[in-house]
Amino acid sequence: MMKLLTRHYKKTKIAYIKVAGLAILLAILFFPSYQKLEHTGDNIFNVYLNGTKVGIVGDPEQVDRCLIAARKRLAGTSDELVLADSEITYEGDEVLWGNIDDTSVITSNMTTVLKGSVKETLNRSYTVKINEYTVNLASTEEVLALLQASINKYDDENEYYVDLVLDGERELNVLTTQIYSAKEQQEEAEAAKEVMTSVGINAALDEMFADIEPAIEKDFSDYELGLKSLEFGDTVEVVESYLQDYEITSLSQAIEEVTKEQEKEQIYEVVSGDTLSQIAEKNEIPLADLIAMNETIENENSMIRVGDELIVTVPEPELSVERTEEVYYEEDYEADIIYVDNDNWYTTQTQTLQEPSAGHRMVVANISYRNNEEVVRDILKEEITYEAVPKIVERGTKIPPTYIKPISGGRQSSGFGRRRAPTRGASSYHKGIDWATPVGTAVMASSAGTVARAGWGSGYGYVVYINHADGRQTRYGHLSKILVSQGQTVSQGQKIALSGNTGVSTGPHVHFEILINGSQVNPLNYLN
Image 1 (cartoon, rainbow, N blue to C red):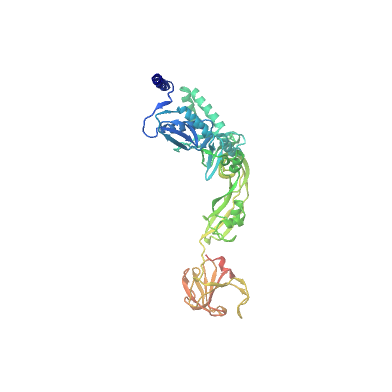
Image 2 (image 1 turned 120 degrees about the vertical axis):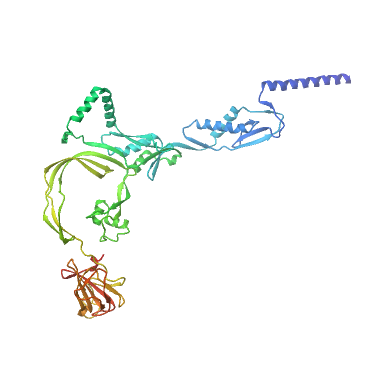
């Protein structure tokens, strides 16, 4: 009985082994995901994306390809740029047989995990750069609407429109602007059509008669008035970008920022006849603001010269528009002043020989503007209704003498005009300028001239008078020593005396006067 059981057990064991072997063979044939793996350490890997299992692989290099494919699927669901976390981890094992997932399954699982791991979405947008100003808009349509709004306020007839074109001077894909005129495009098309029909002998005849026909002067009615050209005065650059919602500006706000006039600093060059108040009025800014903007100007009485450059502010939008308009107008006009030179007079001397009167004229002109400011006026046709009478002025050509401070250094101790008498015998109305300086300081001629007097002058102490070519006279008082004599010719800056404390004086100083027509004036108004 025992032998029979043993024999039966052996038969059953052999049958089990055969069935198991057949099952393994069928699994290999019909379930290819079960693969025989080599004994080389870890040979099967559980793959996790952001902590979630997404599949099993035998080669980790497959994972990168699956992740790239999953990201493409995620990005393909939106026009925006989607950012998602993607941390890959592995758990390895060594087995003889293993179930390997298909790459499509792993990619699908990864896509699902990435959708739940989206960190932020960046919107496709467009950055517009104008000089140092930038603004971000949601689409090219909004960019074009912004640019069109900048020109519409100058184009009442809606003849011009803006387009975006690739900037051929840039290596990267940067867009810039092109402004088209609907009227010009229509005229070009008609001209091209005319050229196509006017060929051969007709073209030759047209050209011949064009050379023979004399040019006829246009009448005022022949001019087509209106807007002739329009373009942006600043370079516009547009680039595609990906931004978050809060970084994108609404179209209405962008139009407000770009078209609103703002105060911008510019340089103004002083021309002949300018005064500070005129410059302030011309640029529509308060005089106090003009003084505050320019360190070289102390107050409203500060001297300015032709060619000086001053900082002024002018209202300008972020994006400037330049345009040319052909206009007709009538106006009163002034004739240019006629000058008659007199070589015996100084340039400070003038005399009007004939008073002017205005004329009247009709004009057609091309006027160029930058925003609302006129830049150039080119007169195309002018017809005088009645002539203007010019102003005739006789003027001197000789350069008048200049005057300098008669000493180097020194401290002003008394100004020109009323004062309390500093000492007995001194006048309460001071007719010059005093500079306190040590005895023996060199005193120089303020301007070239001839010594009219040199000696003692009672209250002046030792004094020198000098007559100058423009009829003025200078006086130098309270000297300690005189170095020139009456009738002597001196040059500007020549040493004529030494300072002192003679005459009616409270201490060592130099007293200096300038006289015009025999009357003292404030010397500070005439010193260079």
